[in-house]
Length: 259
Ligand SMILES: NC(=O)c1ccc[n+]([C@@H]2O[C@H](COP(=O)([O-])OP(=O)(O)OC[C@H]3O[C@@H](n4cnc5c(N)ncnc54)[C@H](OP(=O)(O)O)[C@@H]3O)[C@@H](O)[C@H]2O)c1
View 1 (cartoon, protein in one colour):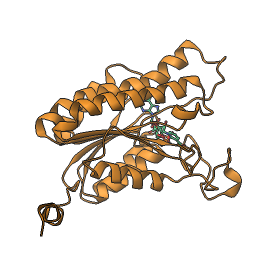
View 2 (cartoon, helix red, strand yellow):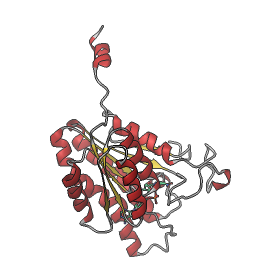
View 3 (cartoon, rainbow, N blue to C red):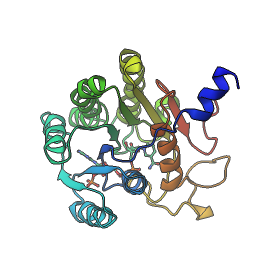
View 4 (cartoon, protein in one colour):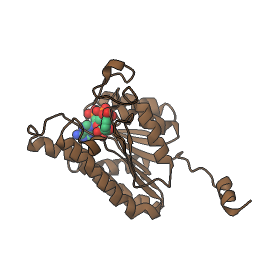
């Protein structure tokens, strides 16, 4: 057997079991689906919510019952101190963060001439500033330990402009530059930094419509339906498992934006 083939046969598949993940926006559609997958893969979880405490607590109980260590925390990322506080509390309760899944996001629809200062600031704080400071607080430990995964949640609006508004599109585009910058600085330390850019995922609070309802399409999507949170979770799990995938923004959009 040549050396390359031997390596392929003998290198163990690195799994996620026993890792600690911080999932922000876990009370939302995508965060909930991904938290369930992570728990199913043996990951201990810190889950954040903002206004939907009951949903987050229920999810926490469900996942604790599977034998995972789970902690549920309130976080409002319009507050500048929240990222540091959330990372610190996660470390106190569960230990160092191995996986950061920054799924919290807000998107209040406004036309470009209606966006005011406060909406611009809030959207940037939640969608762009907090992912950066969360990453800044978890990265040093990841680099020291030689393992880490950071996954941001962008949107196809970052490529196309989208329909929510300029504040939302700009906040999501900013994540792309940040992904590439951070990924390049930590790639050789076993830490990957990537983003998923979904579009039109049903069954979420952002888009509550049932993905399987053919009448629910606000835009012509080539696949002919909305995406599901499980489809987002599938892609996220593949990205989190893969140590050779980094500095990538992967769109998941039913073919809406070809590139
Ligand atoms: N659904 C889509 O079609 C779609 C498309 C493109 C991108 N995305 C992105 O995917 C991510 C997940 O969205 P989703 O579809 O799951 O939407 P969702 O169901 O509305 O969930 C959004 C999550 O963000 C949390 N959140 C909102 N404001 C916050 C704040 N000020 N501080 C901290 N957390 C806050 C929410 O907490 P509470 O509910 O507890 O208030 C909730 O957990 C977001 O970043 C979103 O922009 C979604």
